[in-house]
Every structure is written in C-alpha cells, then in structure tokens.
Image 1 (cartoon, rainbow, N blue to C red):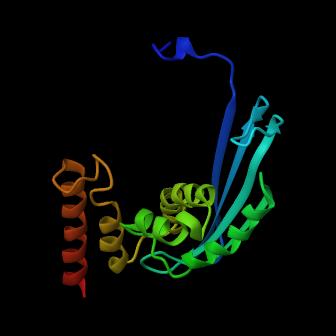
Image 2 (image 1 turned 60 degrees about the horizontal axis):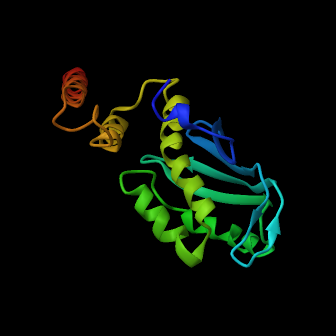
Length: 191
C-alpha cells in the first residue's frame, strides 16, 4: 500500500474514459472514445442549487482516421447525459477536427480548435486522450502487414521525443533509426 492510498476515504466521483479502435477498411480506422462522470453524493452548485448523486456527463466521440500521416477524415459526437441542455450545443465543435493530422502538435491543435468557448472542456479532454490511443490503434490495424518504406520514417517521426524511451538521443530511438536505415539501403540495393 502506498503512503497516499491509506488516506483514501469515501469515493465521491469517478471519471471513466474508454477508447476503442475499429478497422474501417484497408487504411482507415474509427476511433471511438467515451467519457462518463459519476458523482456519488449530492452537491450544491455555486448558485446553491442541490444536485443529486448520479451520472453527470456521458459523451461519445468518433473519429474516422486514415492516410499517411494519419489524419482525421471525419468526426462526430453524442452527449446523451449532460448537466445542462446548453452543453449539447458544443457537439458540432468536433467537426473542426476534420483534416487535423495525428502527429506531433496534435494536443495543441485540439485545444486551439475545441478549447475555450468554442467547444467543451470534457470533449476536449476526451479527444486529447483519444489522440495517443489513436496512434496505438492505427498501429495495431496497420501492423497486420509490413509497413511500406515511405511509412517507416513517418512512423518514427511521430514517436520521436514523445517519451523517455523515444527521445532522439536515447538508445532505443538510435537503434530503430539504424535498423530503418539498413532496411532502406538493402531495399535500394535490391532494386
């Protein structure tokens, strides 16, 4: 047991985010994300209104992804559960994601397009989580076959400096780059 875990009291809130990826053709996937907030006790709002315990937010975002580099080809959202009806006016904001490449800088671009008064904080958070999951899901879908030579460098650029393991001065990145270079040289000699 960690030192903080022993101090946990009654559970008051849960946010669950789930992201799943489905094939949608040879070079396309649909990434579906859902977010659900559940409150386990009644609360009072800043205007002193009492709100009962229960589900507060329930939303789904679906993104159609394809191409190299991977980009958002279509986007849609649903908000079956919202605390205020006006929240649903943000559903159309996800259309601003169409055309956005899922590459380095994706998070900033999502915040620029969906953040603030243009969209919904919860939709934005969900799409940000979906970005990294989309990379994994797309890789799983495309990984069923060997990547074409032109895709290898794009794939490596995506993961470059994305974490400690993939930092450009790190051993794993350097080894992967060397392997890609050898593959390219071998392929060029054979043609």
